Amino acid sequence: MPRSSQGSLREEGKDLHWRGMKVSKRGEYALRALIDLGIAAESGQPLLPAQEIVARENLPKGFLDQILMQLRQAGFIATKRGKKGGYYLAKPMDSISLGQIVRLIDGPLAPIRCVSQSKYEKCSCPDEATCGLRMVMLNVRNSIADILDRHTLADTVRTTMAKMRASGKLPLKN
Image (cartoon, rainbow, N blue to C red):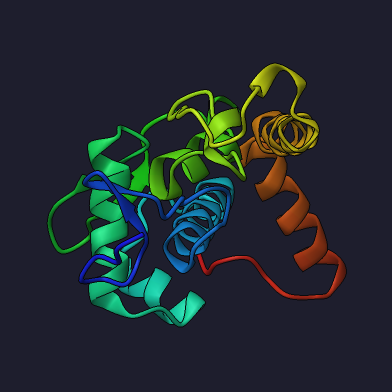
């Protein structure tokens, strides 16, 4: 099969490089930023400047700005401008699942395209209905989805804050 200019396999103009379940740095940073916003809200700091997230998480500012814009466009966070402005959660923490964020930032949770619910593509096996590999990968996809969809931002913030208190670390400054 010919290779595209980016080096991925191509067939009839179709990119065969599957981008299945993998939490990228972008996805990890999005989750960490949301956790920080949740901790801030729970600690009585409703607005959190991007620079504070950058300092706390040691993230590149430009990269974080792109991620925050994507989260804002999707309605998960909002901003208040001004000297005392910053970012805040636009939805209740218990209505935001980790699965929603991972899908938004990184795409499908499926390890192979023929088990994806949102980006399904027929695979190359002769019979999907009897393909053992597909059945295993469907179980993997369903397990990943179940775990990520079951855990909310509220759950994660509570766990994080409990661990921080137990270790003597204060959440964000008030």
